[in-house]
Structure formats: structure tokens, C-alpha cells
Length: 102
Figure 1 (cartoon, rainbow, N blue to C red):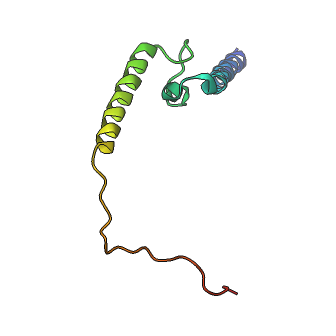
Figure 2: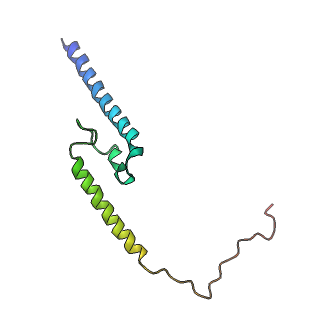
Figure 3: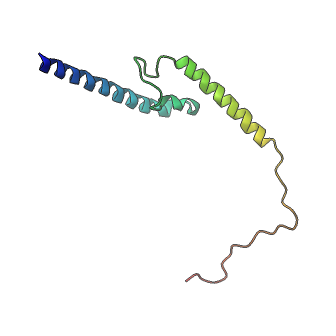
């Protein structure tokens, strides 16, 4: 009887592992067709439940949208700063070779 329980337990563990592996593979197959901002949903850090992208997909989507909005605001703020002008006395060094290296 204990041998039967051990075999059943091992079988269930293998099926659980196989389910996670197949689900992660499905995510990787879907990833190229997703908008780039949502490809993070396909990472291994997103838990796999009975649903492919987890139980709280709407929450994750809202978090991604909020993070992207913050990133866009930050990036546009950095772009709006005026670039520094090079001084008139600055002369970049010439990188031309005057003689052969060898």
C-alpha cells in the first residue's frame, strides 16, 4: 500500500511539473505576438495558476500601464531639458592614424 501511495505521489509531482513547463512554453510562444509593453506577463516570475497568466491579470495589466505611464512622463521630462552647447574652444581630437600600426 505504501508503495502505491509513493508512486501516486511521484506521478502527481511529475504532472504538476509538466503543467508548469507546458504553461511556460505556451507563454513563450505567445510572447512575440504581444505588445512589447505586455511581454513581461510571459516571464517566469508571473505565477502560473489554473489560468495561464495568473488569477489577477487585470491587476497586472493596470500595474504595467501605470508603470509605462510613469516611464513616459519621466522620459519626456528628460527630453525636454535643453542640451548643453559645446564651447567654442573645444576641439575634438582627430582619430586618424598617421602611420601603420604594424
